[in-house]
Amino acid sequence: MIVGVLRVDLAVFDARTLKDKRRVIQSVKQRLRNAFNVSVAEVDFGDSPKRCRLAIAMVSKESRPLHSQLDQMVELIRNVGGLTLLDYERELL
Image (cartoon, rainbow, N blue to C red; front, side):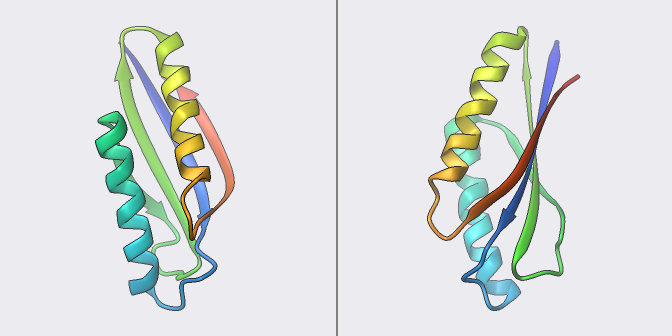
C-alpha cells in the first residue's frame, strides 16, 4: 500500500474576507473529492483571507497510477478560476 500526499499552496487574490476565501476553497475541495475520491483538508493559513494550504491524501497499490492522479489534481487546481497555484509538493509514503 502506498500513500500519496499532495500539499498545495494557493492564493485567493480576489477574496476580501475569510468568507470569500472559504467559498472558493470549499468548491475546490469538493471538486477534488468528486473527481478523485481523495481526502482533502485545509492545513495552514486558516486565518488569512488571501492564502491557503491544502493537503490531499490518496491510497493506491502502485506508485505509477498515484503519480498520474496527483499530476491530474495539480492540473485541476491550476484551471480553477479565482485561485492561483503558488507551489506544490508531492510525497509518497
